[in-house]
Amino acid sequence: MTARPAHRRTWAVVAVALVVLVAAVIVGSGWRDGPGRDGPGRDGPGPDRHASSSTFSHVHGIAVNPTDGKLYVATHHGVVRMSDSEATLVGDARQDTMGFAVVGQDHFLASGHPAPGEPGPAHLGLIESRDAGRSWQSVSLSGHADFHVLRSSGTVTYGLDSTSGTLMASSDRVTWDTRSQLDAYDLAVDPQRADSVLATTQRGLQRSTDGGRTWQPAAGPAAVLLHWLDDERLYAIGVDGRIRRSTDGGDTWSSTGGTVPDTPAAFTVHGEQLYVATRSGEVRRSVDAGTTWQPLKTSPS
Image (cartoon, rainbow, N blue to C red):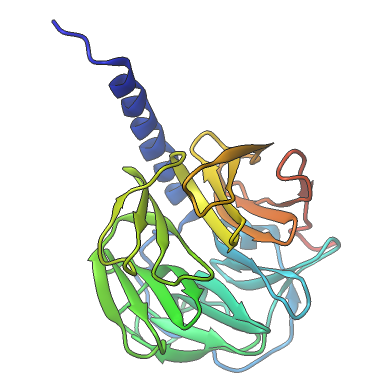
């Protein structure tokens, strides 16, 4: 029997590791859970409340609001504002907030499913908040799309729709174009060139240079989560938990020397601060590229 070449065996191991880790993150974080319920979230602002530890059992996305510099966490039970001393549920909307993105000052985008008992369609489509998550309004595709990932660059917004398994794009967030079938876990879009997109998939990193219409294998580690901060800072969390950085748009990568604690569910970067939410319900921050991590408070005093 002819033995397979070593490089093929190596990539087979990597592929299996990616499948196993992505599956673990999906199951643990609930990003791909089907809701089986209907109804939009409430659309009026209400009093903020302390989050409970159970709030963080399903984290679907994290991002920093430039207005207050605080980390906002999209969970199975609404949006939580984080600080070193407290975690506060924002407003009174308790929808299963998925596909979370911060696109400007106090300006959030999301998707997901309504809170239990609320009337309306099972899939929220694209929803928007312009008051830092205290209230939400339907924008488009209500009842039709369930975006598990939302990313924006310039005037273009991309969404991974779990109902159709497609990548969709919009220049006005009202009308959408289906770009390709894409079974991806995460996306990153070049902040300066909106047609340049990276995706983490079971086949490794994939790159598109035509706005997600076609895809080719990309250089770099087998990764689960990405964050494209600027021209010189593109980050990836590998299937091995190591954090890597590219300064040339993903052509080459180097290790930061850091690793993530536990299996990651969501990841973002703000300045020199790295944030990760884990499937065990922790939210942590690192100021040294992931060498050490500080836990943020996820339960009331």
